[in-house]
Image 1 (cartoon, rainbow, N blue to C red):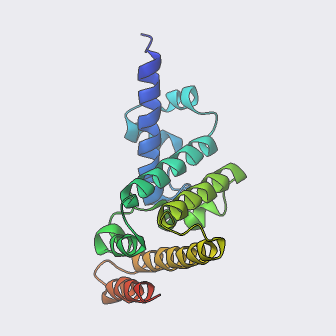
Image 2 (cartoon, rainbow, N blue to C red; image 1 turned 45 degrees about the vertical axis):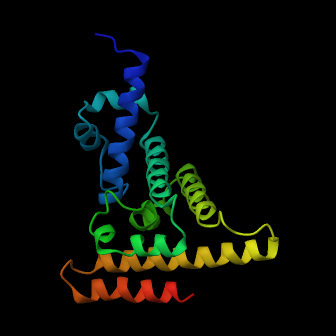
Length: 185
């Protein structure tokens, strides 16, 4: 039975969303195509009807994850972003959380198209956080530098906190300390 173009597009979008979650939870190399397709409710053979390669799906899934992060912070300023980002709730839900903290180390070892999507996603995040910056170029560069610094500190803090056991006092201390330090910048 043949499916419609609209259904094929919906299926592809579902596969991308599923992959985005699974990659954030298990890493790019921690999820095989067969397991990914099964989690999405499709057969392994159907993968190549939608994607030329796993790397193509990784790039789309990365873009999807960044889109979700950007949507979450669309109405936040830097302080709001940091409060949400460095929360235990965010830390404990990697499949729903930020692509940067979940996949930065993996992305560095992936093909150029995946790294390009990663860089573009980070640029989108910076644009949202810098949207209130003045038109003065010097101040805009300063704001961008401050935002890059804050994001790097937040991502690193979340990664370190996730590396600790869930019930570790250190895991919470890392989040709290970095929230305070970033807020004082």
